[in-house]
Amino acid sequence: MNPHRTAMGAAAALVAALALMPLLAAGETTSILKSTLEGQEGMEANIVRFDVGEEWVTDRHIHPGHVFVYVTEGSIEVDVEGEDPRRIAAGEAFYEPPDRPMVARAMSSDGASFIVFQVGPEDKPIMVSQPE
Image 1 (cartoon, rainbow, N blue to C red):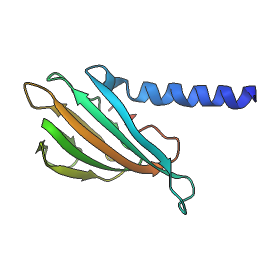
Image 2 (cartoon, rainbow, N blue to C red):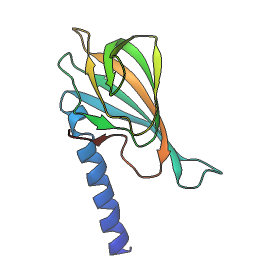
Image 3 (tube, rainbow, N blue to C red):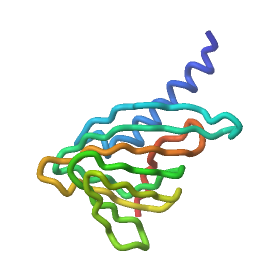
């Protein structure tokens, strides 16, 4: 076993976990699939389910890849910088281009559940904090 590779892998996992901290603070995440993309060197698909409580709100952040979100229960509000905030209810989906600062929050008294599908650079976290 290569100690350098193990240390690098552990560091990458820690960075990814820290990047998700705003999301984990008020909900649960379930990894559904993470896969490299054949013919698209350095790119991967990452699918994650989020189950969040009524108080859930993210820090201001970006997504390093293209993000598609499908809300399965409840509703969320997405406030992308430069756009009007929009509310997405169960059964609806939306797209976010990469590197657009945004904040999201639960809008239902029972919280919300949604699936995030991101296509982006391999081994990057699904979200990166972007303090103002």
